[in-house]
Amino acid sequence: MFRQWLTLVIIVLAYIPVAIDATVLHVAAPTLSMTLGASGNELLWIIDIYSLVMAGMVLPMGAFGDRIGFKRLLMLGGTLFGLASLAAAFSHTASWLIATRVLLAIGAAMIVPATLAGIRATFSEEKQRNMALGVWAAVGSGGAAFGPLIGGILLEHFYWGSVFLINVPIVLVVMGLTARYVPRQAGRRDQPLNLGHAVMLIIAILLLVYSAKTALKGQLSPGVISLTLLTGTLLLGLFIRTQLAASRPMIDMRLFTHRIILSGVVMAMTAMITLVGFELLMAQELQFVHGLSPYEAGVLYAAGDGRQWIQRADCGRAGLASGTTAGRDGRNGVKRAEFLWPGDDGFQHPTMAGLGLMALLGFSAASALLASTSAIMAAAPAEKAQRLAL
Image 1: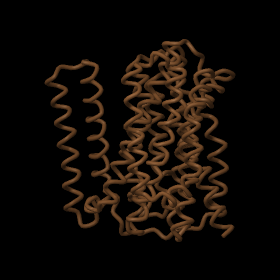
Image 2: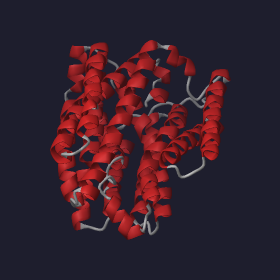
Image 3: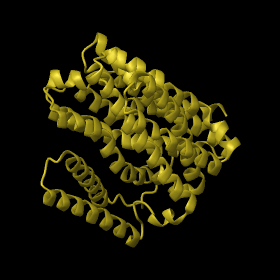
């Protein structure tokens, strides 16, 4: 029992910097703009590239973890994440920072499925596994919620690169504890890596996102945007087709015919898209419109989003009590109601109304994310759970 919870502590420590890095730069946009001379478009890519690349790399890294075992995947991911953090901290141009954020995302894409696979392998009983997932989810939402606050404090007193340097000691501790205490998992050497399929998926995601961004900003002609969108869609369709035809796919697309797995994936995607988009909007609103410092914006940000962290910490028990389906329907109903508010309010009073909305949004998003993760992990076969980590 002690070994189980020690493994969970190590998993939590590994996940902390990954979660923090998702939002730590939200309050740093003005600083990066002045220090690195980053344009508005470059700022968007500095912030967004982390999540975009991580989303595209999670599936191939899950397959890679099946091949080498989650302990080795965690060690490799942590090493890359630490080295990329050092490189990012001493970036001298926006392009260099974007490149290092790509490396950070690849390291994070190794860490996330490794941590979830570690929970699945360590906690075989459903109740304990749900509690462990609740802790994992609390760390993820807590890191994301307090990332802007941490970034604001560091920017107030130190060089902007310190927001990345704080990752290094955490990674060193995790590597030492993992090497000594985490049990080794036998990998499946016959599991193909499918690197070509992984590249295809990443390019498809980047093209689709790029076409959406340029279409909204009107930066390119409709013909170029349509061509980019069509290319991304075709590549995504080709990826799905190759996975269906492969004898040993990177991810078994037939799993999505399972109603619970499909609904869990859709619910998690909806929660993350709405939550992250709103949080980034609020962070920029507080600084650019209302002139708050990074620290002041971080304090208000954390005060509003802290509700999500508190909710996640209790989600393991609450999820069991309320049930996945009921929790999903109830929390998604609340979420839909929440987004009627900013449409009406127009952020005329962003400090108070925005914080209240963030608290309510965090409450429902936390429940939705844990319910979806728990449902997917429980419904998926054990040997395929790692590739469904996100």
